[in-house]
Image (spheres, rainbow, N blue to C red):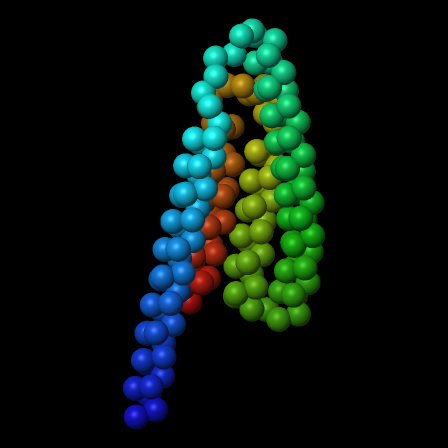
Length: 146
């Protein structure tokens, strides 16, 4: 009798989580489409204007990736300290995911692309940040499923 109630409660929680996930997905897609509709397509008049927009974009991207790098290093410290105390596979998995996010922050910084001569070009250096983000998400999915 008690096991049946627990199973029903677990199924109810899973249904609520699925509905919540769908709501978040719909809201995020709506925001994406609203933003795309709000930003009109424009034809840039001059190369100088395009260069200025690219420079601002590079500065903003550099700042965001630097903040992500600092937060990643802080999180590595926290989870390494926790892992050394607990020796938990869960903590180790989170630590590895955070390390992967740190590499994502490093490789998504435009300065990284400039140092290695790949700024503004398609190639392996535009793919590397996505690989690290995918690794991080795979680790977190693996941890969460256990």
